[in-house]
Image (cartoon, rainbow over all chains, first blue to last red; front, side, top):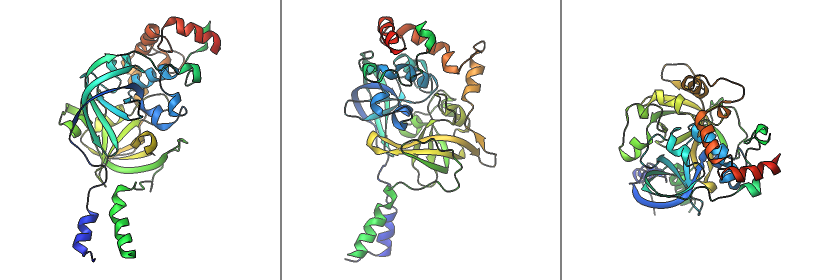
Length: 151
Length: 186
């Protein structure tokens, strides 16, 4: 078998493995997470930066405009571009109100360059915070609760 | 056989992560999967890129923004600015919506947890302009929250955060759960 130079050039010009796709309707249940702390490990392992242990930090990051994600039970993270139809995802009120909550969402998912992007058209159900991680991890970061709260 | 293996490797090359660290002056953060990355990109609105739902000025700071890299058309999600105070980079990037900029920062590559093409931007240089630090968020917050001056960082004084904590508690589980936890925590 001999590959000619034109064929080789064609193969080399093929798109990267992560290519844009059409949107797909998706109903998914997951926790509204702070994606930076989850992905970066800056506060510790991924199991420590979810749920009640990380609720206050998730509020800070959401108010600070860090994107939120939806983390499903199989570990998939969907980057949320609209939440309940609200496109104000850079610090908006909708995301802030449901930080660390587990929700059932209906929307459209797009996949590009290795990330899943989710447009949540409707929150079907809000289960509040059900992931009670503070018994195992305390609060993350440790200064999330000021000492004045104990006085 | 060697030739076929070489060709296979070349064909696979575009799928591998490229090194964009040349010329980077990014400060290391000591993150598990960080790599320095300096590149040229277009600032864009991801809702517009993916769904054709385009807003003026990429949402003028209300929507998230993305960076579409010139070298390979890869779309990166900038999630963090250069500050260490729980805030994102939209305030720094949105003013350049639709423009080509050079950025310098850290890219995260940790496929095991889904972190692919995730970016921390530390500085931005518009075409023909000077480098500027991606650190405008706290100044913007101060402008939007007059009368909230005081000791401590912004997140201790932010009215919306304080309202949520008042409503749900630090753990998000209500006042009684907080009381029991705090008694044990301090």
